[in-house]
Length: 105
Ligand SMILES: [Ca+2]
Ligand SMILES: [Ca+2]
Image (cartoon, rainbow, N blue to C red):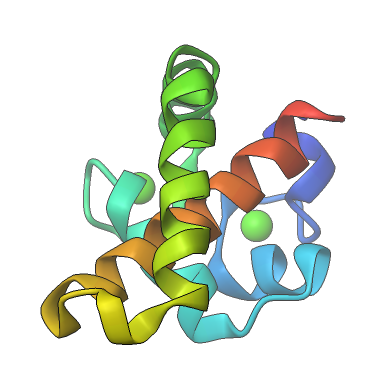
């Protein structure tokens, strides 16, 4: 999926509202995702930042699949997971979902 497909206002930047609208996330989750890949810290993803994410996503797909399986186990069995690790595992699970979503397009 190219950034152009997600960039609704056509400014060449993907912001949290555009991302949230497109994939049904909350704006907060979308912003968290963007912040993680926002190299110049302007709160949006440029085409370059987006492409870097897509490249990373391709390379890490196998690894994130594995981590998602682990995350699912942690989420469905929260009592056996260390409390401090649960947020991170859920985040990885979200990351894997978005990776699969974009790679499928
Ligand atoms: Ca935009
Ligand atoms: Ca940016």
